[in-house]
Length: 243
Image (cartoon, rainbow, N blue to C red; front, side):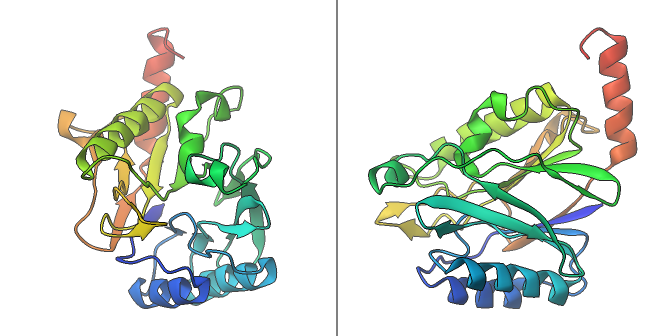
């Protein structure tokens, strides 16, 4: 399974402008899964947001994890498969920082979705920081994280370090791949800078340098999910008493 992480260079409060830009960025074919960053839909009406994610999935020939948009007071997203079928709706359970001050309310946790026989889960941005979001479930094959990593630091490096360590910790603890799509670090949201934390955590890399890859130089980066290797890693962990 190939996943494409989309890191657009700019965010617009106009959700249609964001989807237009993302459509221009995606290659054809676009792999199996396309992961968009948080608030790709900004504050589009729910029907408009769903229509744009569905159209992007059908046009790209891939399942699309559509980032999110503000559906009233809830930060909410959706996944459509390549045929335009709705696979999942998901909420942000832990609004953070600016969102809390702006009246964004916690949503409900989702159960994930299946694609090509694989179990995938979506956590919106700060939700990745809560291990309870993954505990108690059967093993997910990948955790997909749309993010908008606004930071209070003077540069992106500290937030990137934190996200890298958190992503690797989640990947290793829960024996799954973790993919994060964020906006470019020159983007701002309500005058707060973005850190650009797009990257991919691999719990079973072939070398010690492969636990985390990112952020990418290009606005679209691709990663292959090796489930044979992942299953072997899980079997080895269980055999050593870590299962």
